[in-house]
Length: 349
Image 1 (tube, rainbow, N blue to C red):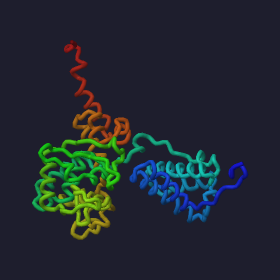
Image 2: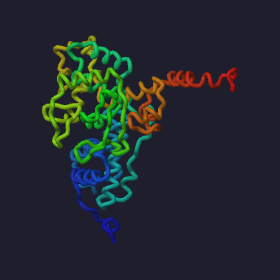
Image 3: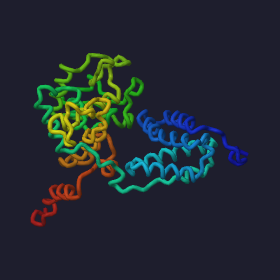
Image 4: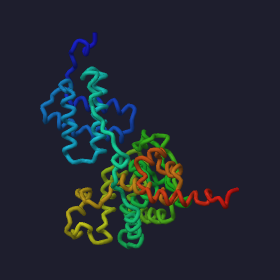
């Protein structure tokens, strides 16, 4: 008779359960995915400790529903609530497997059903804003070729994930062929989200090459990373951390660097122009928001969805559901342009 059959469950604190759960995930999933689970579970652990829940075995369907209501009351996006509850259910499935909670407890987690619009954040770097930003950088004697500029150029024109851009080495960049090669190298610190399936060569335009050439000649630190590699994007410590990239992104997408602040602030006195506060600016954009905007832009430009999927390393169905933000009118116009001649009776051959 196992412990559940005898009514005895192991004592395991929520914090320790999270640690063990993530340790198991590390064996089969990418570091980015494990970090995502960890971040989603942070609020659950803090809530449980605040509620004096000392052992996972104390949880019932009532507490799980309480936590669900607690998250909904925080006025966060429905997709964020759903992601949190999915993570909690995965944690409980692990706990049930190791006989820490009742085996039917994971089934009591209510996973919200989202509409397509709710399933993906509507926040993205809009095409018109991206164009204005990049045109400013390209015409600026001060900002052209800065880390901010080079990163935004690469992120927008490749639609790559932050981890992929961070993984680029100097040897992955070919200015003559105008390409960037994304490689999965987990043993030397730069795994790709989809591992070997994420490896690809992506073409970039001459404007991106010009920005990278200026960045390399003027700003790039000639430093190797901890594995002796030469990162394309470099800093005084070698390969920049994810937080450094995010800082470049938040600061580099603030519209007040090239136009009056849309929030009526003065740039020279605004605290949100400081690196530690830039993410709080309502108009700054994260790397993921650039990726989302880029994918929509590529689709709107008429690039077939299968080709976009290859460039950005995402399944076509995923792009349709999470990234394609085109309006129904935009989609109609694209369909009309593509098939109008094929559906013309006078041109029937």
